[in-house]
Amino acid sequence: MRLLLAAALLAASACSPSATEAGDGKIPEYTYRIVHTYPHDPTAFTEGLFYLDGILYESTGIEEQSSIRKVKLETGEVLQKRDLPNYFGEGIINWKDKLYELTWRTETGFIYDRATFAPKGDFHYPGEGWAMTQDGKRIMMSDGTPQIRFWNPDTLQETGRITVNEHGRPVEKVNELEWVKGEIYANIWETNRIARINPTNGNIVGWIDCTGLLPDSERVEGYTDVLNGIAYDAAGDRLFVTGKRWPKLFEIRVIPK
Image 1: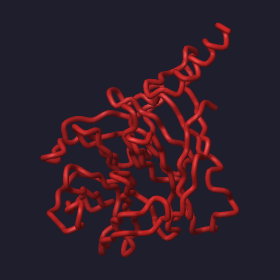
Image 2: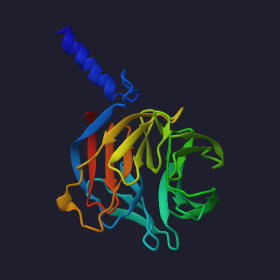
Image 3: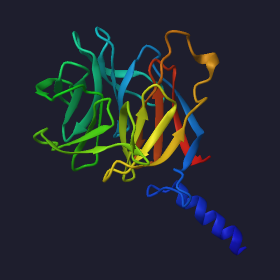
Image 4: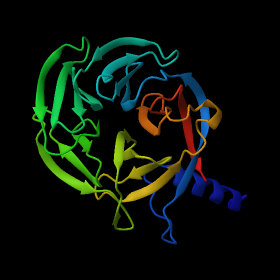
């Protein structure tokens, strides 16, 4: 009985938000269990995603196709939409009653009223814009490099950075971000892996392998793109993931591999 209890406690620890590298130096590996499957607009080139007050907020990319949206989770219905002509839209995040949106290579971001999507201004940053998340105190922003920038959410001024790394080796192509139980979850572009990142030092403390999540039979060659888009419902402890031009969005449970 004691052995069974110890094994159960070890498994629970491995799934906790404070998961760290294993005693043998290996970073813990996780896989997933699909809890629920929802429809997703297969034309949406998903760049940013978050869940708030029962609604999914999503940003899409590609010039002349970029937009910000409010989406009904259960049906995939686009409830509200604002197009972003002449820009390649990237990540979005909420702060108080506003939405902030990045663009890819124009070093320009946009501010909207969260309720109406009415424009409220713009802001600027050096380099590319890829994704954002926030922890209630600060904004975290990725730019396609191993760097994650921290911003003051009221001034949008940079306050610091971390380097995402695996055993000290920088990890490139850090993309869509989500704050989950004290960690930063990040899509790594062009892979099926989600990194669990320590926000203090950038160390990767876990890998979630999402291989096979969208079956090959539901992919359109040359059209359906990579895994991208992470949203977390803190109140319901639900994790959602999707991809660029995926016909489905998945609620998953992270489990040890």
